Image (cartoon, rainbow, N blue to C red; front, side, top):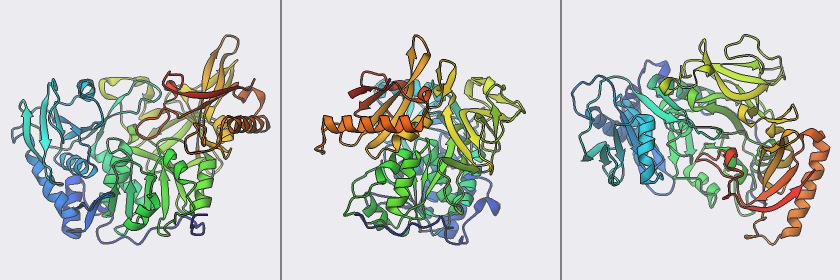
Length: 536
């Protein structure tokens, strides 16, 4: 058995130090926050790389940030420019991202693994006129291309193509494409004030202080790592340890060596960490693990807490709200399946038959459309697309959910994922919770399949432990036993109309960069189906 500390309740972090709470002490811009942190904390590490000895202090970041003030020259222009940021190394990316933001630029972080052929369409989508990267320009880039210094904390140096346009002095922000897991990506512009507002709410809700040491293995070109990771650590004056990606091997050893006090994660990471090996020791100093990006199964959260003693804080967010919308309170026991309470935004649940902006809210425990508004929420998408999702300051998120008697929020489905079986609505998560409770299930996704009589029927895609035959002696017979056990659980837990008609055992589920399942890709040829069981 792994070495585990006793399960402990969620507890506050250490008392805030002199640099904590910048948004409460007059700082109104990221440049001011960075300057204040550098003056107070100086050589203390702000960022560390998890896999080597490199660090970036608050003072070093401030010095590098100042270089970005002259990016593009001193001439005035009619509008601020947008730069595409394509940097692989997490420390290099962070220094460039924060420096550009503090200089009043609009930054469009790009997936550094994107092939050269994809840059043109990505840059056009976000409106970037220059790229800052850690590599030479690919053939046919067609835009200004600037390479970073190899020294962490510095600004851009040499330009390899064209002339970079001048910028207008003033506040910038980030330009991001939504995840696009349920449809075409939507382009979102988040002003600096929205980013800082949300970062401040993350700090206060998670009670982050200068004594905290966070760990972030999530991709930095997504809003979660940018706000919940980089900006919240800066606002709190704390240290953030960055990794290039999630590494399961020696994970807890790294947490202990780095003195980590909280972990920024997604459900896939929580699930993989839920069963420590017999030779793994769980460090006692970790206050919580934060789960975001997608719903976390109750079974995975329960297993993680039971086996590690570390509380799970489940949250709910989206790019359009600068990441965090709700989070479970640290001071209360976790409510299974809930993503907590709204943090810094208004949230309401509207009856499913009502249009956007309707005042007819759904009663407690009734499923409806989740709508939000607040200082962090965008007023619209770039290009004025999908205006029907906005009205009177409210944004319809595309999620369906409900509230309990105490106001805690529960996510039931994306509107596009609801299965209409002969006129009855079937919510995939209800089925997934039953299946994921099986000890042999690694991950599961339920989608609708066209049916000539009923319109749609639910089918389940399941990843089983050792089902691919790699590193596990279990074979086809074990897969059949697991399928039979899952069938019995479905018969006990769900009425017939909600049970999937088929169970596909697959090698893996298609996911995005943050681990969110791409449901529309489940029937693609590249999804390797190992076995199929008709459930009737």
